[in-house]
Length: 430
Image 1 (tube, helix red, strand yellow):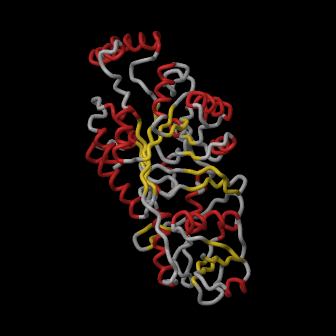
Image 2 (cartoon, rainbow, N blue to C red; image 1 turned 30 degrees about the vertical axis):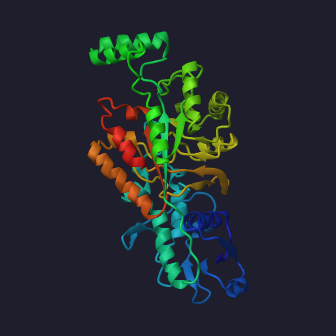
Image 3 (tube, rainbow, N blue to C red; image 1 turned 180 degrees about the horizontal axis):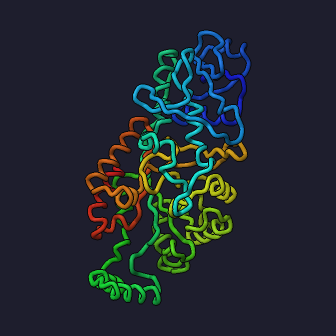
């Protein structure tokens, strides 16, 4: 047990210290504001305050963990060896930066509460983030700081038994469109044929014809391949099904379609199913509730995890709605246009609500990249995509984190656009 002395125990301090010590470093901690209790403690101990008590392991604290509400904070990025960091601590401190205040700023998504220009889908733009502006988006710096801190802690307390958590891979599959051509109803199917003719897409017309009349498998039906890889390599695989009403941005087939329901049930026999709330649900409690109940009625089991369609996330409103619906985990944390770690950590964490200054029960799983990000937005070739994925994977592996990928079922279709991506998927998850 590590004892932390501080002049004031706050919800922010309790939250971020537990992320560093308990979730990343696997070190149980407790806090005290009493000097005599701290002095009497025989195990490892540190001081987090404005000044040291003596010659103990001391970290000079920034004010952030002792404040409430949102303030405009001046941040200058410096380097701790080769790792970007901020909130320098001065000469008396045992480490050169207050990694706990810096970690809280990043993981709470403090900057997303500040005024900012939204992108075309009302999202916080990656380009506005501190991590992108300062070129550390592809590094889980919070986890890196934690392990750099651990090295110094081991020198100070060499006799303590330190545990190590294991590197983990989670494959997540978004099902925006379960089928390319089949089961879409007479009107949408006819419209598809006419659209192909109007735009002279003869090959697409031919593929649509063969699929609709059961001469070939629907190209988006890749679920058996994904489940085969899951079984063969023992990969934790989660599916997120879009069951919202049809809109400009939500084009899955109707959730009342029996073939679609049958597909969801069959996948649920072999993997866990989460909800993929529709485009307009991110600020609508009623839409979220409706879609959650709709999916639960199909799989006959409670839905406990979620990822927003289009990664539309309004912090804290979206998360507050999910908490009210008893969703236990969310996988939306990531950017659509840039790969990397939006919250600067690759260890799952609990959402801290800055509106109410509390740690919530909603666990956040931050993904490292999305297939469309690499191909559509970053314009990477297949070879460049593999290199980027392996770079991110190694960053996570180096800190024993959780590597989460985001693919779509149609990515494995091996059509002209996604040629070679079934191989990329396999290399990602093994």
